[in-house]
Length: 613
Image (cartoon, one colour):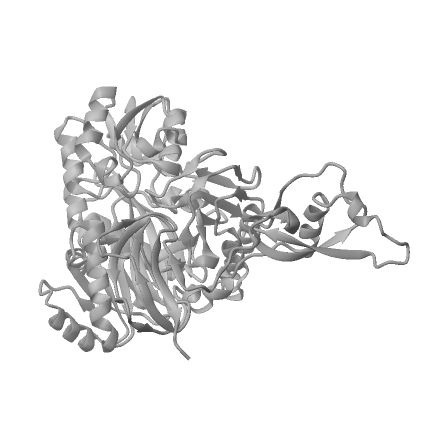
């Protein structure tokens, strides 16, 4: 058995791997960048090694530094987690060549499944059904446009080296194809160093279903059943569950058998996921489910599989990497109940899901009923350099509805401030009629996401209780027995003026501000008269950078006439592209954005003046 392990990752997955390794008596080594010097995974590991500056490309993505850290610390194995270098065949081979144990599949397997077009051809040869589309070498834009037209719109453009929802665009018509292709290729080149794409037929009622597989070095492969990851926003998973709603035994058998064939076709060793897309217009049927891609690593959503099978997948990874056989045969694996996972992100859904960074002055997670995987703690910093996921909440129940209710309750018990989170968005998603019914397809958030993402507000009851702690008793000096039982007063709620109901005598122990926590959301409440600056102004036409980032496209020049909602520029930050648009019809009076420039948060980028009457 491996005796010492370096985790070439950060955040919640590093902490999760450390937890299992510790239980197995394995010494752990963390790596960290400048930004992560005080991170939770650094605190929890037995040893930690600094590997470079904050940007991932200068630290977590530099394989030589990871291997040097392993040798310096005496680690005999490297676990890549997910993301970063986890699916980099060259890095995997470098680890092996350095005389270290690679906790993952063979480099040749990673290579075989790493490019989506080549992987699909391999799966076709193995008898695994694949989605109709174009997977050729000709990347000329006009030729790709012809292929898209022959497939028939809508189509999906996908980076062949993509993953995590990056480098992927849905295109509804030929008029939109050129812009979508350019954007997809640009993002693919930035994220993966490869701008080649493939084109697939876009399934109109798609469900995203994946199968967890596991292989050992002795030729055995098993599956651990399926997960449904159909609730997605911009191709990134939001809530995952296992098993898949509406999956009958016959379809499950066919699907899981195809996944095992796919794994055996590449001589797979370790944990992997075979991802399928299903046309759910007539329910789940084996003849309407196609291979999409294989993830040659552990998945973010692996805890739901652990919950329904009772298996620790990281323990299996470490045992397989140590040369052991699979701990269980296929006949010994069974589904037990239902599990769901929600990804808690440091982001503001009401502001287009912009990442929210800064110090976690308040960070409280549920203490009962379920599992919480996190890589942060109260007082930690949410950095702008990495993915904004701060926790995963996992619930298990005897049936689907119980798991759903437990998960909603867990999210409701979260309290994070001043960093914003998507907690209210997650609860609304769990309560959406289609999700409750188990009929979610990947387009649900695209259709109904605005309502789910609407700004959360505290209930009048919660607002009133907090307001009373801020109001002096003297406020009620004129109170009469026959006066109305409820009064109200203006307050600032996160900088916005609201009327809060007031009940009773006020408080002797006054506070300058009060936090209001309800259903997973937290707001700061302050008396209006105590804020000399008033509420933040708006509508003046100034466009400020919502976060630190890089300008990757500028679509206007000074003097241009623009209309409300027109894209002005594109900002790349937190691994995502964000379009900044005109707040009203007008003229570009000032432009400080230059393509390629790095900008700070709240930097003035554009100023729009109203059009002349």
